[in-house]
Length: 145
Image (cartoon, rainbow, N blue to C red; front, top):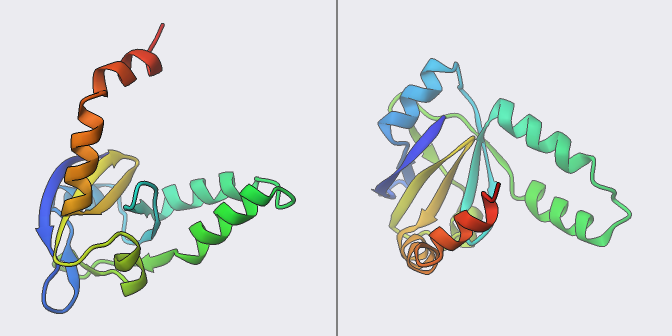
């Protein structure tokens, strides 16, 4: 559903603009509302409302008697915020989430099929450099038949 890599900046009011391709996908799929929360690898995860509800069901089923499940759910859900883009596709990400992802001015928005990830430009470049070297090895391990 969401694919690609887009370099953007935070505007002077602290907003970011979703890539036009993502806005088109949202419009075609009647997506008006998103949820953004702390992601992994120092990025933010952004889900459509339907995908968020699906993820929520999975995580709610984790046993709260397990320390790891409690810890993960606390950090994941306490960071979540509901977002409705304006008519120009701009969204305002709370400062605590920008701090978590170390987003200052330059950022990268990537599509990862069922979710959007928002990265600081520096973190994305670092992640990409580190991960691209092992991309083929990882593919071989994950996609063994």
